[in-house]
Amino acid sequence: MEIIQGKQALYIDAPALDERLAGYDAVHMDIGTGDGRYVRHVAQTRPHCFAVGVDACRENLREVSRGAPENALFVIANAQRLPSELYGLAAQVTINFPWGSLLEGLLTGDTSLLASLAAVAAPHTELEVRLNGGALAEAGWSLEAGADRVRDVLIANGFAMRAPVMLAAHELRSLPTTWARRLAFGRDPRAVYLHGTRKVNSIVHAAPALEGAILA
Image 1 (cartoon, rainbow, N blue to C red):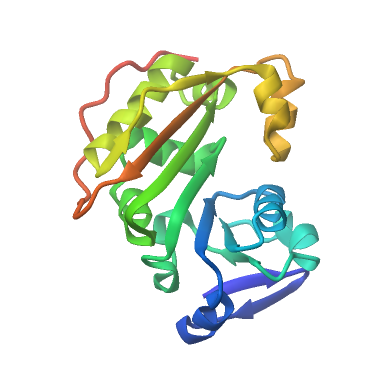
Image 2 (cartoon, rainbow, N blue to C red; image 1 turned 45 degrees about the horizontal axis):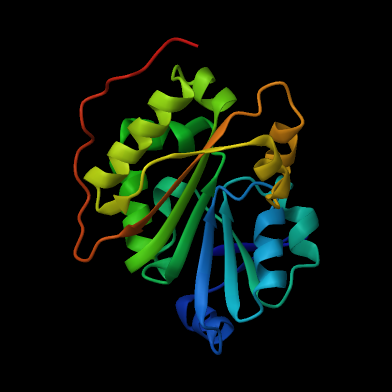
C-alpha cells in the first residue's frame, strides 16, 4: 500500500507493516484524515497506540507526515477501497466531519465503503463518527435527520450504535482537528457525535430505504 512522508511516496507491504506495529497495544485508524493533525495528536498523546491516517489527497498530508511520530503512519487510499494490509487491524476507527464522497457513502449506505470499514475493524472495534451541520445541509439533510440516517446505515451493517449526541461549540474547540476549530468559530457550529462498536460476525447489507432528507 502507498504511504506518504513529506513529499515522498513510499510503499509498504504487510510484513513491513507488522514490523512497524510490533510492541503497540492497539491501532487507531482515522478515515478521511484530512491534514492528519488528529492522527498526530493521537500518536503523541497515546504512545502505546499506533495511529493510522487514511486519505486520498496527498497534498494535505505532506506537512504533518514529514515530521510524524514513530507511532503514526499516513496511508494514501480511497475509503471505499482500503488496502488489504489494513484489514482486521483497527481497535478504534474514527471518521471526523466527513464531506464529499465519504459523507455521501455514509448517507446512502455505499456497500464498498461499509465493506471497507468492516474489513479493517476487528470484532468489538470502537467506531466514532462526527458530523457537521454544514456538510449535511450541502448533501440535502438536516443535522438531526442526517445523523439518524448515518446511524441507521451503520446499525444495518453490523455496528451497535448509541443515540446521537449533539456537540456544543466549546466541545468542538477541544477536538484536535482543523475542521473542528473552524466549525467552532464559524457561522454554523452545529455538529453531532455517533459512537458504537462493531458486532461479532457482522456482514454488510444493502442500505435501508432513504428517508428524512431535506433540501439544503
